Figure 1 (spheres, helix red, strand yellow):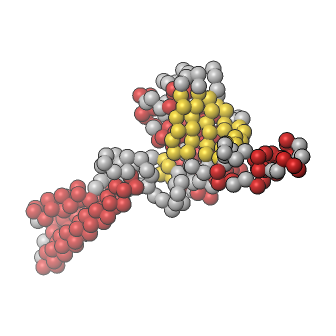
Figure 2 (cartoon, rainbow, N blue to C red):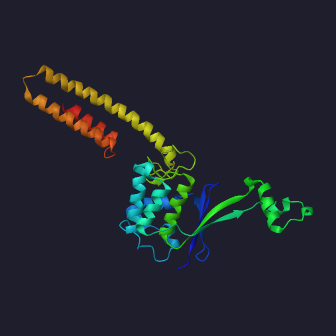
Figure 3 (cartoon, one colour):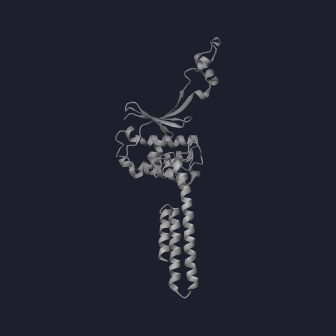
Length: 288
């Protein structure tokens, strides 16, 4: 099996996956391949992720119950829940526990072709080629040079390990998008809560665009639901006070309060929506 390369450009915040023998050479946002792979879950068995195209025989062999996939996902989930555990030391210890290691890697320099380092040194100084190159590089405009980290990968595991290792080297946290629920790394703002993928709720918008809008709309709906809940609460409470001799009114009120509290918990956990809560409240109002 031929190895492929995973090249990270920290300036452009991109990654390049390349296997010239398979004709694969793709550039995408830094870390996206790994994060999409980790987010697949059950969809692994029916997916054409680039990792499967790079590694012969891996399609169908890697699934959501595969030992490495399960344990890598568990490590990431632990770190998402408890950010202080997300450290290079802990990741290296995780690799030690699993008998794994960082894949071979090296630094690649793409220098300004119009100003080679050795040309920046006057020839009359008569320096050796090595010294001229080093002194020229020291004087060069570093903004015109590109330095990348290249990992040589023999497997999907290598690509995953290289990605997390590089995130940690750059101080990039792994988060879960508050809109689509997939993993992402905030490349521009460390406090970002939404990724840049296409939103599963509005295909014309990204999660970053759609998430904030949906959150705003959800707050409005929650306010509407809360006003309706309060109105029904006060009406039922008043009925109980005015008819203290009718025990069934109090029993109905107590049950309703329990049900309403459960609805609010379910909305908070994402099990139900505000729209469904409002519909339930309206049904309660009609029946009372």
